[in-house]
Length: 497
Image 1 (tube, helix red, strand yellow):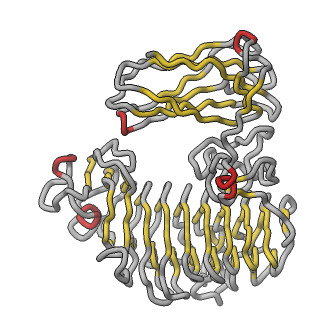
Image 2 (tube, one colour):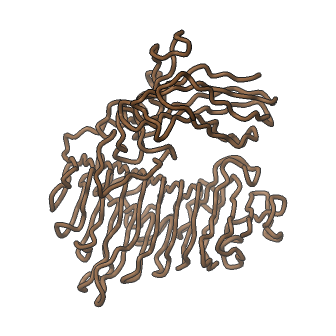
Image 3 (cartoon, helix red, strand yellow):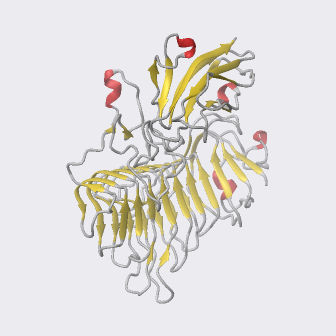
């Protein structure tokens, strides 16, 4: 395995194998002259990469292309933007997608903000996986912004071969469409031989903001008259906001390997689910707030739907009255998306869009519907205060709470006290984490309680560290309760010096 580096201060005339000899462009890393192979990692330093890249390398195992947003690898701290605005942000962008898979496989993209092209009709504006042989593709913690002026373009276009499972995953990704085009368009032909098959495409923990009347997830086989059909698109713990139709299956989509919509939230769409034949889409623990929840078929046994249904999601209103700002479409306190449900056939992803643990939110041991849990649920409590004096922080059920601590560029030791009750249990004891902060050269650490509940307060002591500069570290406290009524208590945080 080799690490390669791309920086805005780099040069394509050098080896690319060190920070001081970094390449200048993404094209150099994975384009026609690329030498990267499976197992390699390409770190992109902060900055704007104005490129339309056709992947030409052929890795036989996973090749990672990572936005080094914290500067830990390249020393360049900040956002990594890969954009089809190849001249500047005011000049009309290119008419081809910034990323063309070109039939290549085993690629994983992480922490990159993609900005789309001014694509023509039926062409991808951001990710073009049009060729039939792309498999084993992952996008993790990425953002996709579609700016195409053509209403028939697609932000992400996938066209597989008949009978092929493609293994394409979008996890913890944000999608924003600025025009009424499809966000995701899957065009895979039916087959004359074999059996119905699972295309193996999954969207997990994603938030999709759709503009206009376009379809968010569209599965439309390019040839639909044959006997054997594709299906199996999986949408798990996603939040869809707006759009003409959230999920659409046209003729030729399988009913024996259906599209599955699980523990998701659809709000503000004209139509929630549109199918040609009942059974093409199966929804479970999904909440649909749309003028027309479904055009055919019946609701999943554990789902709710209707234009009057209110999801209680935050939209930024909290800041105008001085409350804590939370991400857009975050569950409000007491929201009915919290702990909505699960059964033996469904297990929520372990982390949500904010890369924080599921379940959370307090009062429930079940994951929330949609892409977000609710975090920051600690409350002040006089009960079980350390030494019986003042108040401690109580977190009920699985949950977490962040605090920021100022530190100087000197050797620093931080401690926090914790106890928990028998309702919390000892299967997963409470934890405290100091989160990594590359700006001050701190790598982070997690401490787990060790005694048995119920008990007196236990002191968790973090290893001494010396920041490279003055700054802050985030102390994150975790209740990992085995029940929705168990409590963890945290008190007496010390910082030395």
